[in-house]
Length: 221
View 1 (cartoon, helix red, strand yellow):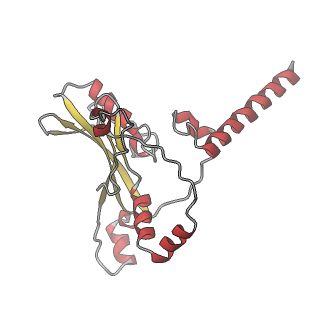
View 2 (spheres, one colour; view 1 turned 120 degrees about the vertical axis):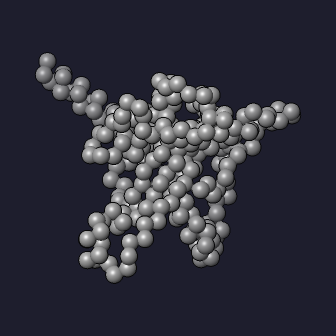
């Protein structure tokens, strides 16, 4: 009996890991559920020089904005003092936190929800005495904000943008003539086009019945 249990456990364990590796290789359903993080081989991605916080904001029909990050009943701090909305690096499930706050509070009709990323260099987290001993220049704390997700109150995602780090990396690549030339030289012969229509494309469908063109904005600040 113990042998059967050991063999069954090994088969199930190896099967789950194989499924996770296949999902990561094929980029299939890697963010379909938070538990996928436990089996997808995408850990130890390195550390960033920037610190970030996530803000969930709702826009009412009266153009009044509501803070959904700090719920009336308090935040869940899984580790330390950082709220759980900051642990979703790809913001795949962060909008659901804002929708949950809307379901359990009284408010005017909501038009849209925004997930905004706030970034700043980690060195500015140093206390002032430590900063003054290490640096000669005064602390000039710059904050950068980038729109990550726009969705409707029913949960429909209309726009999704990459993170601030990826956006800045793209700007540096575009501003480098050598990288542009190499990209053109190694451009593949076939392009996989997967349109993802935004809100306007879903509402204003063309009269000829053709699929809507993808709606996106490369620079969302």
